[in-house]
Amino acid sequence: MRGKLLSSEKRLFALELVSLTVSLLQLHAHALLPNSLRHVFLRSVPPVGSRHHSSDFFQRSNVRCAAPPCDGYSINDSFNLIVLGDLHLEDDMTLHEMARQDCLNALKALSLLPSPPCTSNNVDIQYEFKSNNEQEKITRPTNRIFSSQLLDELKQAKAGDLSVAQLEMLMQYKKEILRNSNSNFLKCYMVSLGDLGRKDIRHEPGDAGTTLSFQLAKSFFDRFDGIPYEVVTGNHDLEGLDEFETDAKNLQAFLNVFGKEHPQFCRQVGDKTLLVGLSTVRFRSAPFSSHECHVDDSQLSWFLDILKTHPAEEGWKVLVFSHAPIMGSGLRVLQSVHVQNGCAWLNHCCERTRGLFRQAVKDNPQIKLWFSGHFHLSHDYEDSLSIQDSCTFCQLGVMGEKSTRDGRRQSRIVQGASDRIKIYTVNHHKRDETTGAAELRLDADIDLLEGSVSLLTRDNSQDYNHDDWFSAYVPEPEDG
Image (cartoon, rainbow, N blue to C red; front, side):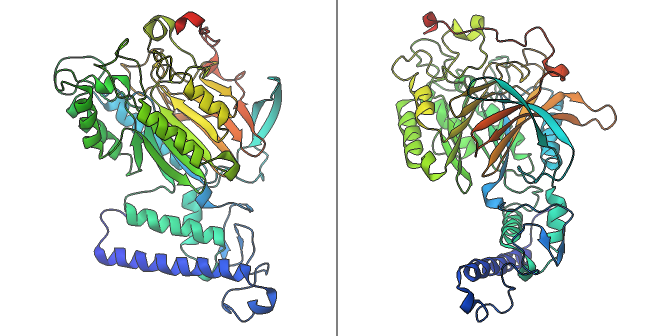
């Protein structure tokens, strides 16, 4: 269904949601009843465990799904996420628009299930990094289950013939259509790491930090098929010196355009999964480097409170987003550009607070991922991914031709479920010669149950075969 839903169509979908909700509640209630009462209650619902009501996700007598069974899966625990690095809009947006479509195509190409059952002989060869830093070659299944395939079959079935997990998936689809009739995706989100305006300063609207740059960026994000998104500020987003006298007014313009009350954000995307974003809030008032990404005390206190109220012991997973990485992340930095100028890490020049982020990671194993950009470097380096404690730090590249430092243009796709998280790279600069599609590359597979991180083997990929592969710089004490 495309275009704007008519009011009658919305009412129909709402009624269908009510019907699905009732069916779901019936199944839950039925499963909780003692066996002696089940024959009295919900006579139309087949007993749990019968051949008509299998607990397997896909094995249903009335729903002929081509996908294999998957015990324990729930759409409520799953999410798909686009992460964009420094945007830096350009006069010619052709490559940006192609990159936007690349990300949407990547979502369509990926499995709906981040943890599909192993029923295929197709595998990826990867290396798993153990606690002692030794590498062990392992394999992972590559079979995929597609949302379009499943939904087409589920939509044809009667609600009473569906399992709990199938009903949850169909309900999520109905909710998505009510929210946005143009959407083709389930449980999909997007985060931008800021630096929205063009890279070169011309002292005119459209420059980084101007109201027009925010408006143009919002228009660009809105064209991602209506996928809900969040955005944090980068150092250049408060650089609208010709338009605003103060950082506060500059920041307020950013908040107004994106309809935000606060520079930070927290969005729940799963039963126990949070996306948390931190923004820089000063440029003119910075005591040292104007381009330092500085998170103020208010955001920092808020962030620590989020972690306190969503502990690992209760099963929470937290993904954090900031424009610059934190000190101690282990990600690649640029010594001559950022380190020497005091703007390489969050709160780089603030001795009182810069170490609190790394301490938060040590104290809170629920922080599973931390994404950052800032350096305009690609994902094709040894230290573009870094594992510290329970957190995997992820460098984000850029999609624009004028802002890349190494000629590579990339974004990331993240798939999450209750048991694992997968991290992909979308290579905007590498395309299939026949189809023209951008390359989609699996970079990491995080097993949340075992606490291990598997990296795609880099021995057989030309992406990593370059002279700058190894770590370029190790921070020194005098860096601050």
